[in-house]
Image (cartoon, rainbow over all chains, first blue to last red; front, top):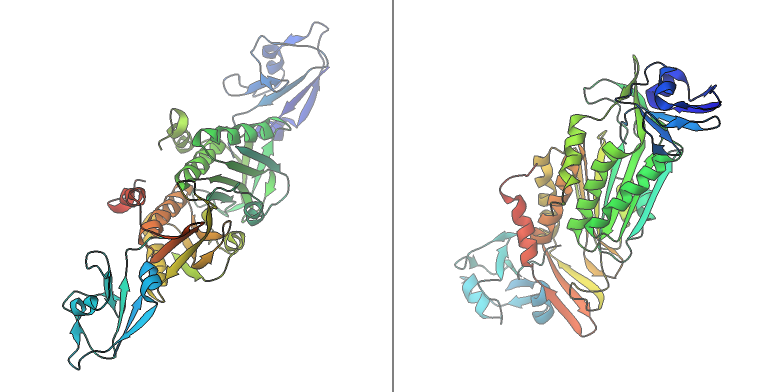
Amino acid sequence: MAKIAFYGKLAERIGREAEVALPPEGCTIAVLRARFEGLDRATVRACVDDETVSEDHVVMPGDRVDFLPPLSGG
Amino acid sequence: MAKIAFYGKLAERIGREAEVALPPEGCTIAVLRARFEGLDRATVRACVDDETVSEDHVVMPGDRVDFLPPLSGG
Amino acid sequence: MRIEARLAEAPFQPERELADFSAEGAGAVVSFTGLARDETADGAKVAGLYLDHHPRLTEKSLRDIAASAARFGVAAVRIVHRCGAIAPGEAIVFVAAAARHRRAAFAAVDCLMDALKTDAVFWKREDGVDGGRWIEPTEADRADRARWSDHCPD
Amino acid sequence: MRIEARLAEAPFQPERELADFSAEGAGAVVSFTGLARDETADGAKVAGLYLDHHPRLTEKSLRDIAASAARFGVAAVRIVHRCGAIAPGEAIVFVAAAARHRRAAFAAVDCLMDALKTDAVFWKREDGVDGGRWIEPTEADRADRARWSDHCPD
């Protein structure tokens, strides 16, 4: 399992957190995106450990991924 | 008599106010300046009724004149 | 430079932030307060704002933005930013800078506000009579931000 | 535009001035506080400041300067200026402006401060260890003022 967190309009639509079952070898961010609707690669940033990660970053069971839509700013 | 008021460094040197005896026909600002030291025409402004007046303005007995050195600003 | 950056989960009082902000012996203190309005830029009525935030990245973004004021040569800066549900009239953001020269304090606060408007990690929803609308940065915000990106004008 | 201008003969609290300054429903409030420092621009120790004023012209100059902010399209401005003997750390001046857009509020306060620095009717004495020294406007103050004389940059 991996914990996925959403913010802003994504959180409103999907919920703040979701748990996703992963194979033992993990899966890439690109694969993870496809499991949810609207995680547009051009605008929704993926973060692991508070750092932006690329599409081929491998998420392992127990990891936590944040999906951040465009910031509105303060 | 006319009341003359001074501000800033002039007030420190001459005092806040002075009374000056005037002839019944009054006297000009230029003449009044000469009665005190350091009322430099180029830098010390004369005001009557809160308005700047020129050197030939006639001050009458009972009038009040302010001599304002250059402003320091706030 | 003293740096203070804080995320406020409850209403805060800008005047207390100003009272409590030490000028560090500097002579000039500039503050900015942004208040929630009761209408949008287009004049539509707003019942309130909701600012979603990230548990760590948001406060980190406030600290990073505050630290960027160092180039203005200011003695101290403070940023306080609300999150959560904000009613019209409540303060959203308070920014202050203290400096020896007033020009530096003005430039720092102006620049920090522009940076907050685009770079602070928030997701903003305006709640109107016909439901909520999530906001994304405007072109004007991006243009303001770009004013500072290469060099400081003063 | 609401205009408030006041000469303060005793110490005042900038935070109370900010608390008490109504934004008139506008979203942006900028404030400037000028504090008496304990040294001059050249680094000499200062025991205090003395600001001599005129019984009517001084307050009139504050009102006139405050009114000049109208061209920035702000909703409200406030100027509070001390006179008399001022100890280091005490507030000399507080200026605030409220506007719908933050850029207008910044420009108004910045401009009002430049105008106060040259046009406010005060005579300032810095009291140092070796006696008092009466101050006249600096070239830098005149240059700041000139920035605004022809047109508003924003």
